[in-house]
Image: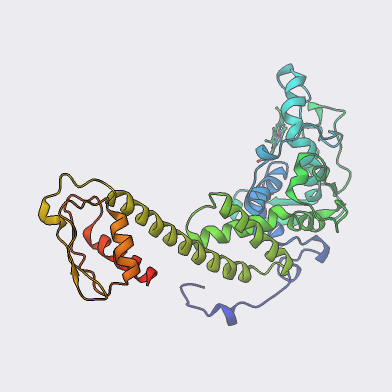
Length: 344
Ligand code: HEC
């Protein structure tokens, strides 16, 4: 499409997934049942990969972060050994953490497989309505009393426990049949919305969200995103304003810091300055030139603030006072002029 320079607005025609893939309408589940995703995550294995990479790609998290060993392990499949290496503690303290929650969710993919013979590129997504794929029943001898998948019913055990923090929707039951409803379960979580927002933030701001301010912006944008019917376009608009605002705050802060630095630098006794550096002419409103006392130092700020500002001097010849200043003379001059302007 890029090579042919097609206008996407006219070249892209909206179609249903079932019309293109031949999947029954009830078996389509968006990106998860696309050919590319199937080739990547339904090929070989046990279809748990599809679940894991959906978490990574669309909820910005991975199983390691979700491990919860306090969930009921009644739906962990037979292929998961209950005493890996002869040690059942490993099963209870590690394996259960992922498999207790993941297996009953990945059960929603029980009728899918990516079928290919020699060349994976020529394979295709297969959907076996009402027949559990063989890959769900392999290695049954690892633990014969484990869960035997009868159909594609799924249940979200992670609605309770620590993973309740993913923000599941109260409008959904947390259980269902097939990938479509399981996909809805994931897509209606706060974690999904904030993941999309984070991606947009990084896209626009060219960095990851870092501090508390960033995170609260992400939260606000996430709320807008859910409230506005998940229109990603609006998230971009949201991010641009925020990025711009943050930039403005940054500049303001830099200015304040520079001012502070200047004040500190200006407060330094100018013992090392040559006397001629002290000579400066201030024109008052009365136009009478005022000559600072010869002993005046940089620390005579009171003199400057007391005299210059109340008098509203129109012209202040602020030539660079000292080459040994740490701040560039040009910057000094502009800051001083700014100070004057602010005070005007
Ligand atoms: C951090 C989460 C996590 C933990 C902990 C975990 N697993 Fe898994 N397990 C997975 C995922 C994800 C897959 C799917 C991997 C894939 O197909 O890419 C998987 C797949 C498996 C499979 C199927 C492998 C296959 O494709 O044939 C078995 C068996 C298994 N795990 C057993 C265990 C055992 C035993 C333990 C404890 C020692 C354990 N798992 C701990 C996440 C986990």
